[in-house]
Amino acid sequence: MAEELKGGVIGDEGKTAQVDGGYFGGYVKPANQKEYRRDRRYARNQNGKRKVVVVVRERGGNSVPAVFGSESQAAAFMRARIAKGTVVHADEAASWDDYTNVLK
Image (cartoon, rainbow, N blue to C red; front, side):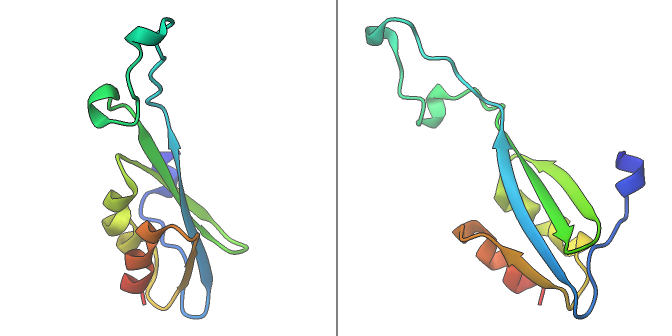
């Protein structure tokens, strides 16, 4: 599958693409007894296995997925996979604001 998607470019002048990411993995099971539980929101109490799958999808066309440690690491991927002149839409997350401006 990776060979099939290798080098694929999404969009073109006047076309529209969408980008979004979903986080998976990294679950830390809480201790059974309340006094042994840790606050799992802190980085020191997480296991570091959490990854984000970023998908760039052309409307009515192809999709290109990639896996990163965080959404901020997807900038170079997006520059390489989205053609100049493509209108990029993302959700309201502030992490995508810089990337949609870079591609214009």
